[in-house]
Image 1 (tube, one colour):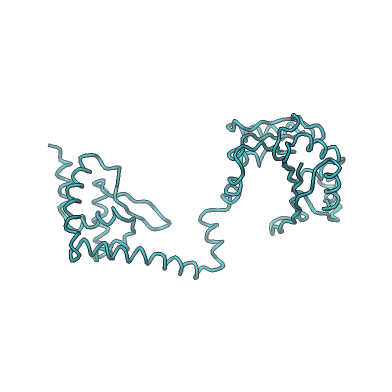
Image 2 (image 1 turned 30 degrees about the vertical axis):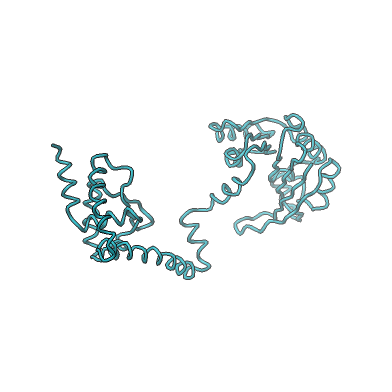
Length: 315
């Protein structure tokens, strides 16, 4: 007969360990919480948890510096699960008595779980304005963009006009049916190709914004991020965008608001010192696009360039 059976019988012969397992089958707990439920010291609880973990009856995960334990439900070998069912059924029968130790454990468990909500409220009150920094330290900020993009309809076809090295393409690909990246510079597209090599729904094109390599009415959203200020003649660009957009399609422009930084024209090759709302609206209207919104973006403390806006135009 396997020695594992006797080892499991030995583990389940200790009443405190059985009480702990029964509680952990109901709720995931830290060592301190479990010690309060079974009313014994944390070192004692830790010692029994170590034995139960070695025997496969409990598992744990890290949450910051703490360890949270739970019953290994669904992952036990069948013989161990069968043995636990025999013990659990007997414990449950005894637990029906309100005066039993098992019933008291569950009452204390309810109190500790309820207290967690109060502890969370106190945590938020204590952290106050520092909460954003705490959350960023734990999770970063990249998830914000992905969560917002996930709200887009999944059947969209998007064209990133002047995609450059394709930094935006991997963010769009998981939430769109197809993404076209268009740029005139072969060197930029080489980097974009490496970046999107494993994305089957991304198609790269070498082409100009005033002669888009796309068929008529095939795009739902045309995205133009920090590109228009490099284009000398803008009118043909708006005409081309209107041609490839489907009925109800949108052009989204992110660019610089009007400014007086002449140095950017000399050092960065900018053809325009930003744009006014009225100026872009006039270009869009002449091309058959209707201005829908214009919003000045909040300044980025790390940025050294002029302020930005986001504008939306629709067919």
